[in-house]
Length: 570
Image (tube, rainbow, N blue to C red):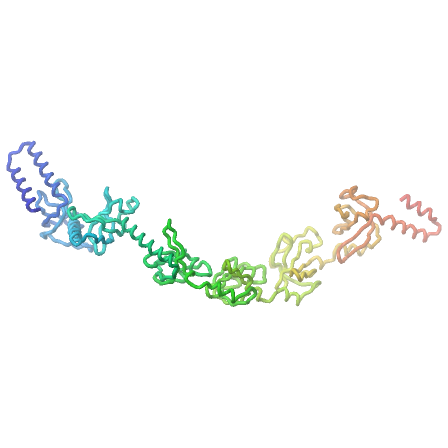
């Protein structure tokens, strides 16, 4: 039929050429040829390769037209760049259009047309096969999909309404799967749909998921992909996520360290998110809960052997075996309170003995202690030292209120007020970590395991010096330094303070005194051990009376009246 049409076209041309045509007739001839050419566009024709132009992009093919058709050279080459044809070879092509009356040809479309025809001839109503293809172009109605694998070379049409794709140029080149929904033998077109396929797949998956959740049974699945947050496992054609927290009873783990892609694991479906279409699976739910067995095996206070599984700045995670993990806080690693980092004491995979200090079965938490199974440094200290001992130690820590001095394996506190008799001296002003210092043990608190130290106790106190030149009953002068509810503190000399209680002020009242005011008082007692001096204003008069009587007894010429008169004058 095509040869007959070509013959009619050639005959019409010859008839027109034999006629004496005017300008109007020439226009008519052009219009006639254009209309005939339009009718041939898209048809498959046989042609002969006339010339392959090496220096240009195309080959010339005789297809019985007024001009030789142009066939792009790229369509004549295989994937290795070798020519499939040579000049003079017959070739089947599709006439895709015209350029200045020169036919534009396509060999690939002829192959595709043949493959489409073969597909249509082999197609049976109701087959609806699923094809794999690549989107190669788009038009107003949708996309042209070129088949892959067994459908290689076959062109399919994917309407926009059936594409299930966001409108984007990035869709070109995208590999897709679609279902054949219509075959038109007359127009030789094959329509496919992603929408029908995806919705069918979703429905099938939903049935599988419903069945899995309803049964609640443990099933086998293949690990398809491992990520930082878990693993995707295929269970009967449906992918579910095993979150890293659902792998082990010991808590979140790194799945890549335990499993490999392609490995088969036992899982249990635990939930399905309808909105996100996410199936959640669990490996630990498919195994026996090890925490249940612990209830009859372990108690607080038990000592167990564990393996260090992870080291963090704040503590260490230890493995008890059988997916049970405990936590060893940094404060429970050693009796040393100055631990900088657990890695200074422990290393990965190290086996250690620990004591269980807490078990929370409800929240599946277990805390252990290493220091509880080690000798207690304070007990060793008590065996070696006692109150009053003078020892040497090194400064472990300097604080605003003093310094901790390391003596043996424990730290004693040297408070600021025990550093020097000079009240202005602070630990942070004179010490740095590592300094060696000699101190005296002044107190051991066994209940709270605390040791108090003193450096100034090794020096002669200002009160000791004062006591060498003064005694009880001496009358001295002092300046008011501070007034309290219970009495008045006075300064006798630099570094020497004393207390006058309210009842010892005599006729003087505390509210009448001013800081810096000088008063006269008698020494009541000097306590060198406790570093205290008490004064009394009230006793000054009595001491002076006794002194006057003593003076009278020593001098018989002086009468008692003279003595009393003299005292009254004073």
